[in-house]
Image 1 (cartoon, rainbow, N blue to C red):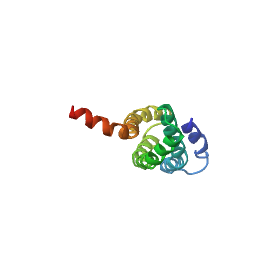
Image 2: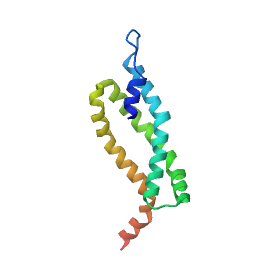
Image 3: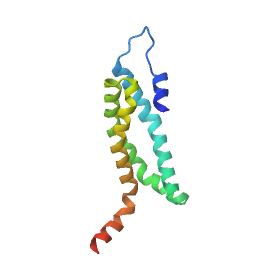
Length: 127
């Protein structure tokens, strides 16, 4: 849904000069500054809630993980978006996004469950 909004709102008028790079940078900036923080906050809240954590546990998870996830997002996704917006037509951008999302989903899962695994994995290895 977000990418359809970007396509509609950030486009060039027929009689104006607008490069692919300018459009791509505007879309990336809008995504990273508006969309990413909201989605990250929502995702952390939902994951913590589904894990059965109380409100203080949810707040603690957000405090501990939000900044790291958003920071890594700002490193990982902008180059992916530049590549996607410049080299793919809109109809194929979704496929590229899905392929780039797989490593991102692995990172998110690792980051979210890292603190849960620190104590148990080491203990299991000792047995």
